[in-house]
Image (cartoon, rainbow, N blue to C red; front, side, top):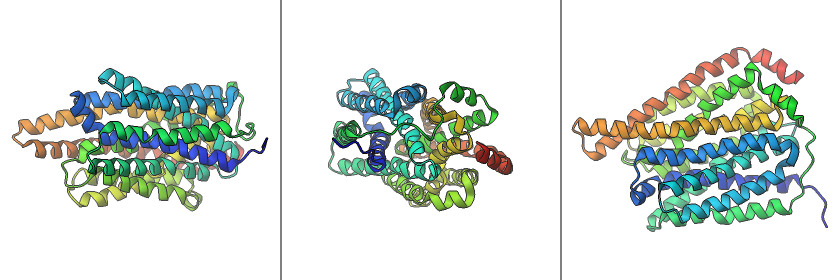
Length: 405
């Protein structure tokens, strides 16, 4: 029997699990209109269905972060595999709003379990370059969204139903489940596994501040991506192609994150990302047609480094929070996005009705509603400019904190 622990196998299996996680986001974004039509759901109800996935995520990260020290990553990944499998099958056979809520929650729980297990596992295995390797791992979130978006676009061209789009995620789920089942896992040696110490370290001004920032970075990235279909459907550009283009750029950017993180340090990366994201979303709210592709490219560069750099920031600047700190920050991001999803959906409904009441046609009303909603969403990264600016001005003190642990 082979008793060798292979970091490469564990890293690759983690990446496949993250691909499944990302595909659930992309494909759900691509079938929102179909779900609305088939089950007679409005955008507010679709927002609640989206929210279940985002709320299942923090439930998993909270429990996963607490249990990581006791059970290790393997048992968390078994939970992820089972939840993905049951959630996907349940979605395929959904018969209405309630079933979609439950299945979305299970998929969100699976996604959170992947993050709760894999982020600290990778930080532990690659302790000397955590932010860089976490960025390389998170290549496969946008990478998986590219796969899901292109698959959705391809299946749309053949008129295939949303059930088949969900079903294609079952194969990579089985693959990562098998890889983790066969693999040997290392003992945690390079992250703090003292749970009481982890919990105590959460109640610091810096961790609370970063957790608040994460609610805004996640909503800026994921809130915008989840609603691309209804926001841009009538705008003269293909929402699924924009999603594939944006996430493709994000994947390349994260893969080559090492030199950028080294040059600017994580704080500088976050500050610049907030500035670029603000400009990009504002541009998306005022342009039409092919100009949207240019604005979307800028958006991709803006949100590219948010998620993995926030996780890396916690692991490097607040190492005593351990796996729990990384998990809770990710959970805060998803929880906030879950809260904002129904609100974004209601913005679209309200803005559409306002435009219709003003005498616009349905198509023009949807375009106007998309622009108005994107205008509202500009405020998320705008606030981040202020918050990350504060961190940037205090970067010298924070660097001392990183050096001293």
